[in-house]
Amino acid sequence: MSEAKGAKTFKTKCSQCHTVEAGGPHKQGPNLHGLFGRQSGQAEGYSYSQANKNSGVKWGEDTLFDYLLNPKKYIKGTKMVFAGLKKPGDRKDLISYLKSSTAS
Image (cartoon, rainbow, N blue to C red; front, top):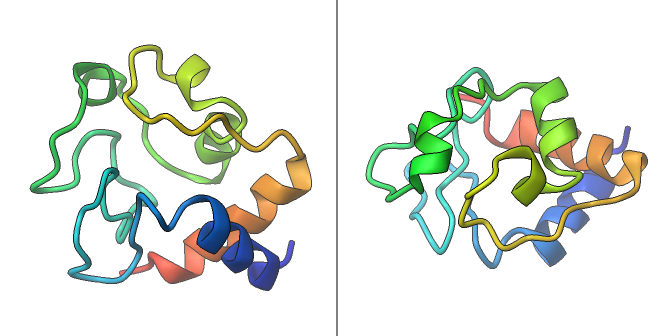
């Protein structure tokens, strides 16, 4: 896993909709700070879809790995428009970056 590669993936594929820093703003998608261990649909101040709120998904490396493959398939009814990352290595790198950049 490469945190540096994950940072590049975040910048090119995620940062237009998400932020990671503590106190960062919500954009089209929620701020991801404190993501690991949090239940889907729970970032304060963000308007989630009912599908996300009701999914019961608890975010961790395993759930993110599956989710990032195809978000719309993983949580049917999500408003996230991202098509997903097909390559397992790309998902692992992104998760490595998110784990360090979103830590409380």
